[in-house]
Amino acid sequence: MDGAQIERRKMVTLPQEEFEEILERAAERGARHALHEVGLDGEDAAHDIRELRNLLDAFNEAKKTAGLTIIKMLVTGMVMALLAGAFVKLKLFGGAQ
Image (cartoon, rainbow, N blue to C red):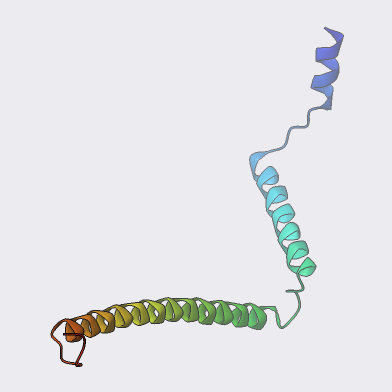
């Protein structure tokens, strides 16, 4: 029974608004600390983040373009192989008789 009374004394009660304000300040402080840790704090932070987003967009576009190019090359190769096979089969290249 004594243990329950001791635990109750350790609890702190706050009004809801004050609790939310404390949480908001802690979250903002944590976000600022995280940005500082990765070097995205200061006056140029917004510019740096925009540049990172642009770089990421360009990288994603390059990946997409590379994938489409590989697919086009494979399809073109398959069509050329089919045409070459058809030409050989039709003896248009003077293939074996």
